[in-house]
Length: 420
Image (cartoon, rainbow, N blue to C red; front, side, top):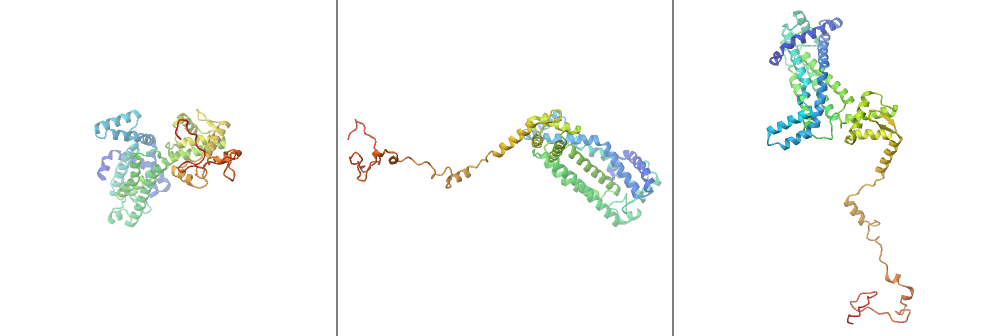
């Protein structure tokens, strides 16, 4: 770690200068040798860096969403050219160029703040050894060595020896308790941030390898930071815990205000917009108007959340316009109610097994017993043609009995050419 930190030694002077400026401010309030003055100086350094990285964070969001949308196409290219790796890479680069996507954009915030992170590590290591660095003179180094955060010096580490911790006027127990708590908090905040992204701000309708990759990172990153954290000074743990909390809050804001299309966060956001519109009868903010305008422009390409929003507006008697506003429309409400009633009245289609079972049950419409009976010849015969009790017809002639093997009932007359 010391070797890596020395690579970024060129930025230690700006980092030390920023810390000294914040220390002069907080030192006047809390005292120059207190942990609050030096700890808040490190926290302020993180906040300043993250504010400067907001444009990169916006690019990271766009790149992440573009990568999610391109996953099906990327998977198709991999399947098509799985035996030709060079052609596969060319097609991937062509796809990135056509869509304007940069895969490295999702890593820009981490890459951009890495030099500051290692420079701070280098500064704190020099403070622990009592050496001057950057704009930190000997008096400032001695003041920083005396600064303790909850009993742990800002330059102490979890793996430090008792002698080294004693040289910083602290006990090994205090150092390890404070560093262990901060490592757990750092890993937990990292895990929660990634889990929040996976559960709320991912389009669940598209199952891609990218989602599996992000799910693995959700568990791997906290473990990596926990293992590395035992070699971080307390001041670096303060830095990394602060940047994790900042990332978590920044991501919460983005999820609530600019969710990924098709995600649960988008459904919750559109329901809040629907509640606001139905209560006031208008779209008040410019941001909400732009969202409604984008939904209207999609037409039939809307996802389930957007269709649900448009239907909710129609049921409330509103119609979304192309400019993002809404107008009162009784016809939209009637159409929405009619469509809902039609869906409710439509009978549920039964499976073939259920239809067969219902056909064999008594009282069923398709039961054999309910089949219409064939008309009887005797019932349909005229009254004067019915035989009497003597077996004779009303004309007095005896009724002809059928011969053996001959069909009962009225016989068909024989053809004149047939033999008797």
